[in-house]
Figure 1 (spheres, rainbow, N blue to C red):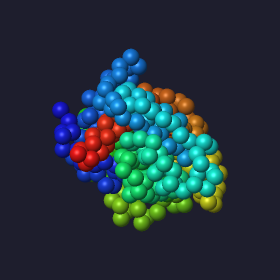
Figure 2 (cartoon, rainbow, N blue to C red):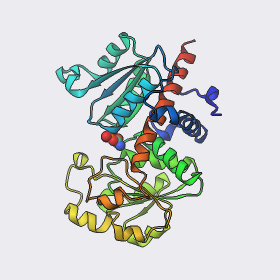
Figure 3 (tube, rainbow, N blue to C red):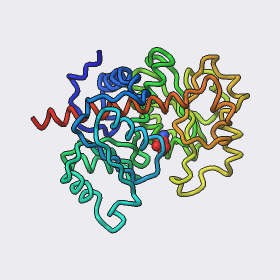
Figure 4 (cartoon, rainbow, N blue to C red):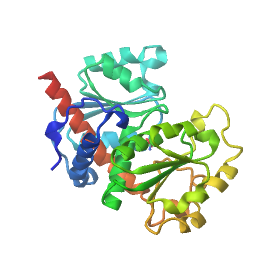
Length: 315
Ligand code: CP
């Protein structure tokens, strides 16, 4: 059984700030919730009487929908709120917005924002529990957690695995959350990409940094392909998508040179034909849709734990 009674964190701001034991508690509770997460007829009452606000200031399909489903399947009231309908468009500050939301009786704010640190700012300035759903290039902790859960299910354990994260590392909050989570649970992480998207200085974070995918492709138990984030690139970081794909796409030919049981992952949304073609995205070794399903279970666990911690701190 998960050790949820020892959980103390009212906010999930990043995997950098959680211990291995805390990450494992979330994964264990997510495993427990998995049947309810994918059964539309089941509704738990663990968040009965609670209100969860989904506050998305950047576009999202998977994260926004799965937080909404997760909160609903735990019995919470869910309110969805996006940039287009927010009075921040009229000049209201993020802190004022959050304080007004709190004044209406919200327990948990799930926030996605283009500014790194926006969730931390809300955590300091409201009494709501705050869950980071992706802040700039900083972290996307629930994506990191659902990736860890998917790897643990496929491989049995995370300790000792060799995991490659390939692509636009510089702009990727997914890469950072995966790095912190995987290293805390004992995996070895290699970042691979072109020098314009990957700096040797990232070795200070504990990642191996390589620029040649073909040189090392046979080493890995898991290969996680990242999306090229054109929206976060100030200057073109690659000459063309075709040249990027020639060097870094997981093609069917490259797949034949991976380990026989190498798991293929991608956080989505996929640029089909850029990071990987459909024949690889949809192959037997692809965990892309299981990742999405696990997102609901992970978010059910996260919302339950932060809400309980908030209640405990209020008493
Ligand atoms: N992986 C992910 O964060 O997808 P969305 O942007 O669709 O939420």
